[in-house]
Amino acid sequence: MAHKHDPNEKVVFVGDSRIRKRDYSNVVPPDYTAFPGKSEAFIPNFLLKEWMAGVVVLVGFLTLIIAEPAPLGYPADPLNSSFIPMPDWYFLFMYQLLKYPYASGDYIVLGILGLSGIPFIALLLAPFLDTGKERRFYRRPIASSLMLVSVAAAAYLTWVSWDHYQHELEVNGVTPEHIVREIKAEEAVEKGLPRPIPGKEKIAAMVEADDPAFTETMTQAQCIACHGAELEGGGAPTLRGIGDVLSKEELVETITNGKGSGMPAFKADLSTEQIDQIATWLSKQKAAQ
Image 1: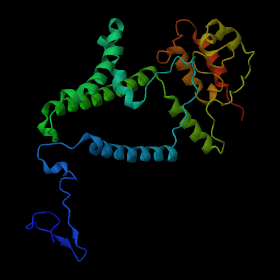
Image 2: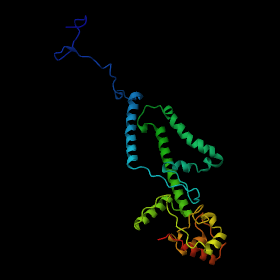
Image 3: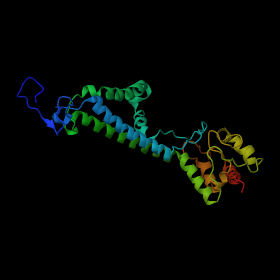
Image 4: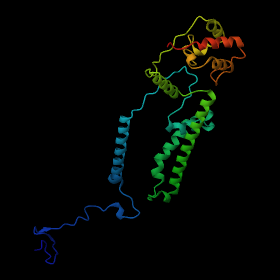
């Protein structure tokens, strides 16, 4: 039985319910893959997929943080003149870029605003400058080339910055603080002692503080200007307990010829006898057993 005035209308029934079968082809739009060369709708298709991918990455990142919390850095020592600053690894490329002449000195404004602002602005303008609908990277040579050049430049600058940092450590005879503390922790464990807590290490007391090597010779040589009035450290490392670190021969060599850019040579200011006197007294500066 027809439901319209046209007696020739074709009616399709489902089972025995006599329910008319509806055509939903005009209600649900086809998937974007049905249109070659076209892209999917940004809202909600693309945005929803990106949001779901971001949620998965964020959950994984939070899980990693909870499982392996980032350790706090060591207490800052503003009087440590031998410290060589170094940013985190993901900023090394920018750190190296700011060292070049066109990004420092008279061009410091270009280095601060230009080198950091231009890439940020380029990322904001990228969707408007590259409006091609091609999704394959080899069909988008300009965008792909710029991305490859950026990645290669960041990798190269990171390597150069790290190599220069290692060179500075070697020239100045400086051992990074985290390595020094790791060595001290391993030595404490081997001796059956508790691990030293950063910032709460006990400074060894001075031995024979009234010795002329300290009260006269070292005062005359202005050693206390860097190492502190009580050798507790300041602009230079502490000398308390130095006898546990260096032998008398090593102390003589360091005082005579200096070490790196922080420790000057005293062979022109002190006699051999005075240097031997200082080294002998410093070799006695050991932590109480």
